[in-house]
Every structure is written in C-alpha cells, then in structure tokens.
Image: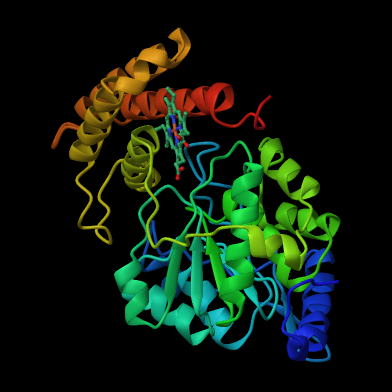
Length: 370
Ligand code: HEC
C-alpha cells in the first residue's frame, strides 16, 4: 500500500498504477525520442506501425523490440525502444528520449533540454522534475513552463541510504503538486532507479515490480548497486518521513570529478554523432565541429588529470586518464579538416570508448561499499 497519499487519490492512483504496471510487466515499452543528440530525429523518424490494445482507461501501443545502442559501446545514447503511449505522453516521448509514463503520478526519461522539451512535459501534466544527473539542471527553462526542478545527483554505484531517504521525502513532497518527471542523462540507469523509489513511495508498488520495470527501461544489470538500492529500499513510514530533511535544491553542488565527466560526456555525444555519419558532414548539427570536439575532449581529460582529487587515485585510474587524453588528441588529428582519416578516427574512437568502459567498470559501477 502507498503510505503517503492524500486519501482522495489513493484508489485511482492504484488503478492506473496497476494497469500501467501490468502493461509494463507484459513487456511493452515506449516511443523513441532523442532531443539531446539529434533534435530533429524524433520528428523525422518514421514511427513503426504500432499494434494497439485498448484497455479500460488507457491505450497500450506495442512496438517492436528495442534497437541496439549506437557506437561508443556502453556509454549510453542508444536510440532505445518504442511503444505504449497516447496523447500528451506520446508527444512528450517524441521530445524526451526513453520516456516512460509509469503511472498517473510519475514519468521517467532522459534529460529534457530545449524549450520544446519542457513544453511537452508541461503538456503531459508534469509539475516537478527530479534530476539525478550530474549536470546542473536548466531550472530557469523549466520554470518558464511552470515546472519546478529538484536536483539530487547520484552515481552509478547505487543510491546511498541517506540519499534514498532524501529522495523518498522529495517525491512525497513534490507529489502534492502533481505528476513528477525523473531523469538522469540518458534515462536508462540512474533515473529509473530513482524513479523506482518514487514508485514505491507514491504508487505503492513493490520492489519486485519496479525492478522488473527497470529492466524494461534498460537499466543495465552491471549496475548492480542501482538494483540493490531498489531491492533493499524500505519505504519509511509517515512518522519517519517527518524526521527526514530534504532541502530540494534546484542545483546541488557537484564534485569536480563528476563535473569533468559531465563535460566529457557532452563532447563524447557529439563525436558519436560524427562517427555515425562516418566522420562526414552532419548538416543537422551545425554546432558540431569534429576536430574541435576531439580537442576539447582531450583538454577535458588533461584538466581532469590536474585535479587535486587525482592525487588519491590509483595508478590504473591515472593511466586511463592519460590514455584517454592521448587518444583524443590523435582523434582530433585524424579528423583534421580536409584530411579526415576515417580508419584512424575509428581506431581512436574505439580506444577511447574502451577506456571509458574500463575505468567505469573498475572505479564507478561497482555496487556501493563493495
Ligand atoms: C579514468 C577513469 C575514467 C575515464 C577514463 C572515464 N570516466 Fe566517466 N566517470 C569516472 C568516475 C570515477 C565517475 C563517477 C564520478 C562521480 O560521480 O563523482 C564517472 C562518471 C561518468 C558519468 C556520470 C556523470 C554524472 O552525471 O554523474 C558519465 C556520463 C561519464 N563518466 C562518461 C564518460 C565517458 C563518455 C568517458 C569516455 C569518453 C568517460 N566517462 C571516461 C571515471 C572515468
């Protein structure tokens, strides 16, 4: 049972929640959208012809199996799945990649970025956004559309117990204002884990049910800490909640290492787009200047290597930062204007992707405290 609902909304929330939960459990997913990496894509992309299943109060659209993630291996950005939405939610899904409407009260997905993204979320009834991403949220843009931002950044290693409780309190508090959208960056791993806390607090779903949904949302099993957080989460009672403090900032302070990663990821996303275009022109992304993106990436790794926090890092970590920097310089060279060496660019791109994955596996993705 939900613990913290205003009495009036309990029954209908449960009904809608159960309906959607069963649709989700049956394996239905949502529409592709991709505002971050390709603003025009959602509009331009032909929608797969959906199968429509009418249910009591919702229409469930079943779409084909998820497409495989694009280049860059595990570092996200996959033009994921498709499937079950109608009306304003279907529209929001065209703007926000990996958009899931998990219940009347909650939705989850990738970072909204443009004015149009926030407008679509507002039209889908969203009143608050909880970001668990490392990037500073565009709170001003959201406010223009009557949406309040709350920033509670988390890692890939799991949600520390105190942060999980802070999230629980945040969800219950924001729920009073209406539906909440939860996002990380790509909307696949950290966001669905945090959204699951919200589902347990507001929709009263079990950990089992919401971890099944995390799988649908694409949360990689390698992030065992995220799954463990949700499985082990014990929804606090109303009395306990009253003792929990949640400051609910629009932008939480981010440690320099995380900030560096957010910037690195941004340039990496741009390079993924160029790679997809076989290192050729990307006219729909006039802002991307390939050799420059690689140069900035190299500089970002160099800056990272100079951070005071590096002193405490193990040797493999230091070596990977240097390797990434060197490969990014080489990539920049391979992408020189008028003299693109696609083969060399592919090799350097892969070298960088491998290092991102290796360092994350060793130093980021392990479950908390393990
Ligand atoms: C030398 C190790 C190392 C390398 C190389 C590395 N990362 Fe990271 N990355 C980390 C660590 C550690 C964190 C967690 C930082 C934290 O939360 O404080 C992280 C976090 C991230 C995050 C999450 C940021 C957030 O929102 O909290 C993203 C995204 C990311 N890295 C992308 C990349 C990409 C893309 C590459 C390669 C181009 C890369 N990283 C290379 C160590 C590395």
